[in-house]
Length: 394
Image (cartoon, rainbow, N blue to C red; front, side, top):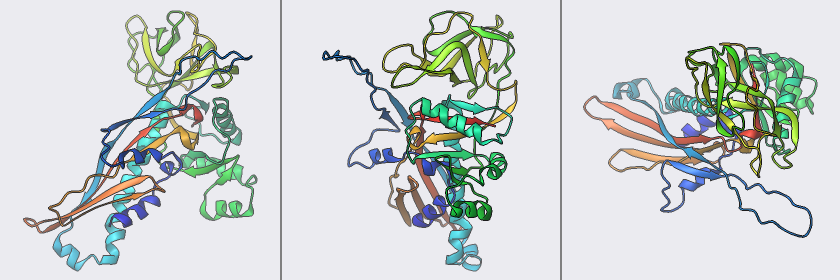
């Protein structure tokens, strides 16, 4: 049953196929119990100096936390149903497949929701489905400017509306007749512009904040993950929502290695809903943090007092966050769960291709004459390198 579940799961998930899954191994070590949260280190960054003398600065090492949560799906057919209506061959298609689809959808939904609140790089216009390939190329270029590796691990995930709009535009640029044939036969895009394209119905949808006023920075020399702002319309709930994107006049992005400006204004993502006060003030939780120097520098300079803020997208418009990303931008860890005795059957299986471990437990409800079957997955997501991704707003 567990093996059958994973077979159906692999055919049902999309986004999670293309992300980093190596940290599941942290939980399979003998007698290693790190708790529900593990710390994932990022590769250290280094400064370069000229000449023979080395400066030996202290390392600034970054890490992100990945927290796992349990989800389950279950069913309970009666003995009469199992005896008269369900053959062994039907059991997988009628029950296990449905459970696998439900849990695969939950995994992808959580991952794509994370994209919409952690990735600050973006191209396109919220509320307008992108129709031109140049929009996706712009998104890829922004991620490359932020250090995304150039290899065969880049993917693009779009929602059904974006897929419908872009398939015709892509038909002439595939590298092989096989890809063109697949596009028309299956309605899938395949490989183009150095990326694997897939459609996922669970691409995160959101609503842009209420906004209002002429927002600006409140106070010079601000750094870190909180930005104080002013001159919003007074007393507005959700003046900006988690996932909203904005730029600040005069604050440009830098290449993470050279620290030279990319020539583009740094884009920031709001990580928590924000309200304006009666005085039109709002404290915004943002990513990336404003860092003006050192190995983790993100911007050319701290914003000036009164620097104008420009929000991407019109007030209260509905939007989706398609995404261009490198495999190592996001991490999925699914942990094999403990099995217990005293039940008819309990088994755990792990699939390294999907990165998912499932526990299937089966027992008998003798009071109600039912077969109790449940599937459990314990997993978590982390945006380990969100700068190696870019949203394509639509």
